[in-house]
Image (cartoon, rainbow, N blue to C red; front, side):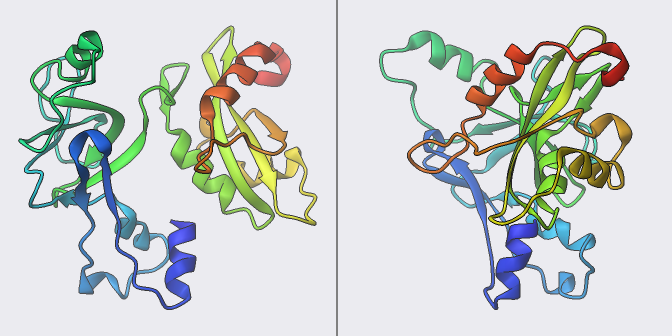
Length: 239
């Protein structure tokens, strides 16, 4: 939201879509609404939901991945985003097992977790593989990253789970500062603590460049391995 709001501040009218190669491109589209023009900064987050299905993809839903029942449109209940349409791929080339797993239950499983709102608009919460389970609480790494990136001295951030012997995982943030800035890990932790629930606040902040692939996408799998190698925080410092 912070990046998109800055772009709109430059005079651009931003619309965005959500999709993937397996679904022949965009599957949902944000349609601008005139009634949102007067909203304040927090309310404007509504604009950056992933949107509703487009004309080419009627079968878009958020489902319980076990029961395959649609989650209630309350904006709170998390499920897996799933697609079904005649524009979906037939399968992965020479990989029957991956194809069967992806289409288990008759819908394509995206691996993205999200909620659906009363207006039918979907909002992504995290990748299933990235969701942190902290003592029974589910923590969206995307939500934590959004807060960290809103810090005036932060350029990029990626949050992963660090093993915890007592609670399963704790949030671990890898942060790249803007050039010439020198915010400390402690300052960023306090910044987060003032803006989110205590259990969501990163217990570990690592200041460093972030690994990216050829398209500039952050390689979270590399960071997950680094966090795993750190092991559990000492009890007195971690809780």
